[in-house]
Each structure stands twice: as C-alpha cells, then as structure tokens.
Length: 107
Image (cartoon, rainbow, N blue to C red; front, side, top):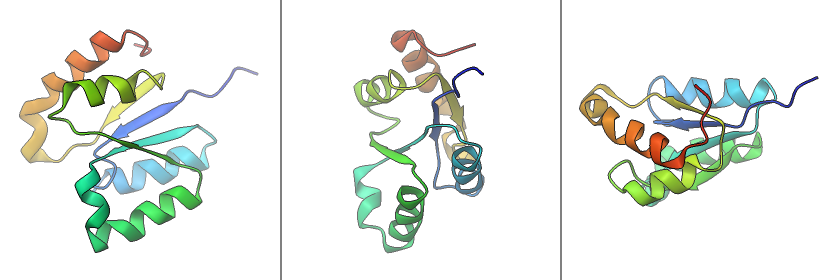
C-alpha cells in the first residue's frame, strides 16, 4: 500500500478549513496547518489549535505574506490545500509562487 500524502492546509482556521484539517487527519494523512503566530493569542482559535494538536495535526508557523515561511512549510509536504477566506483570494498567486519555489508538491 502506498504511503499517505503529507497535506498542508492554508487557511485551516477559517469557515471551511476548520473542517478540512480534522477530516485530513482522520483519513490518516500526516496533516499540517499553516498558522500565524499572532493567531496563538486569539482565545477563539487557541481551542481549535489544541483540538488539532490532540488529533495529530502539526502546526507550522508562517504567514501568507511571508514568502520564506510559506516555502519552508510547503517543503515539508506533498499536497497543499488552500482554504483561505474570500478576502485573501487575490493572494493565491503567493501560494502558487511558494509551491513553485518549493518544487516538491504533487500536481
């Protein structure tokens, strides 16, 4: 049987992402969620982060606006799922640029 893909969810604390992250983990995929360090101090999100960690999800600290942190996170995975909110949709090109630079994501 083939090895499960390592999946990074960007936007994992949003309206859709908060369902994708645990579903990926339940499916047995090594699951990663890109989170901003400033989000750690948000009481509403801290409970979500704890539930992610308890289900085996790895939190990777970075920011969509910080290209290097995005590339560093993407280099650890095989697949990237973007579930960023509608306000960040114009910035999808940043995710694509980081994926291209990392060079390891399955297409």
